[in-house]
Image 1 (spheres, rainbow over the protein chains, first blue to last red):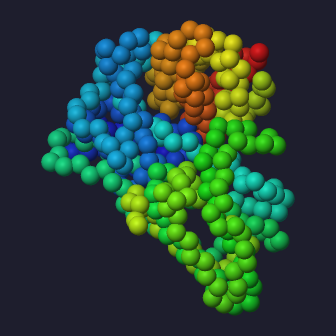
Image 2: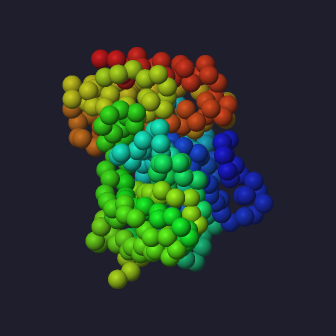
Image 3: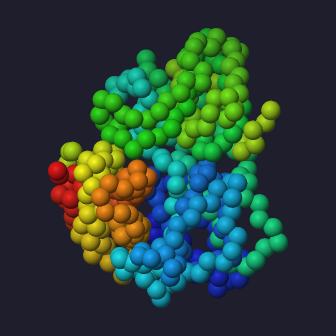
Length: 264
Length: 118
């Protein structure tokens, strides 16, 4: 999915019971609209974004007539909302369609502290935005997200530099990370940190992002050295993204499994 | 405050710039001036530009709803977040042809003259 976005009306016309917006974020400012009303709204199973804002037309929400709410993996919105295409949000004087956008912040210009623009590289997994709008009542609504698994094995690491890999982690409460260096001859310096994004000037000398070290970079021996790390919300906290650093191209399987359940 | 050379840079500066407006109690006025100067750049008939105009709708609603003077700190956060996302959306659509360079430059100009300049 990209912009212009798919429209919900063909799904209504063809008797689908739902409109599923399921897309990697194009940018931190993604916003989607629906000119069809719905009976229920929930975060979709594949969403990396945890908190999704909705805006809809409300005659009693003076002076803007725009009412805003948030859905998350722990709270769906159950109740009819109409797209009031004939009415106008004030004061902008635009149709009262339903709007969706991530409440969470994303910043593809983020660079970890110590990042060298000359020597290092960074790769982002764009956060998936998934929201489902139901056109008919359903007997139950399960907003929980799937346990997401990311798997990597080989990497493009700049010579003499560090590759940073950024994985979305919004609202997750548990993560199992398993890294194994299967390169037969070279050690791999592997580290894990976490970030909560801030609105900041990334090209300045002092970006405001909040970084937390989970596993300080350390050499992982060749031919089978392993790092296993558990990240728990109750212990380390909650973060927008996890950042992995490596110094060798592999092979080095990296398995990351994250969940909304804080497994004890 | 600093003016921005691109919309992506403008996004990153949104919080710092609006902070200066907030502490002197002019956040509401700045948001009002900004949305009213930019909404007509993205007409409703131009469906490709809706992601930008939808953000302007939200900023307009914020401007109408927040109090005059120095309001709750959450007003600043909400305004900075909306302007941050608007600038990113416009930057993306400029790069992919969803909006024209003329529209993007006019939006950036409004940002620099209304939000960024003391």
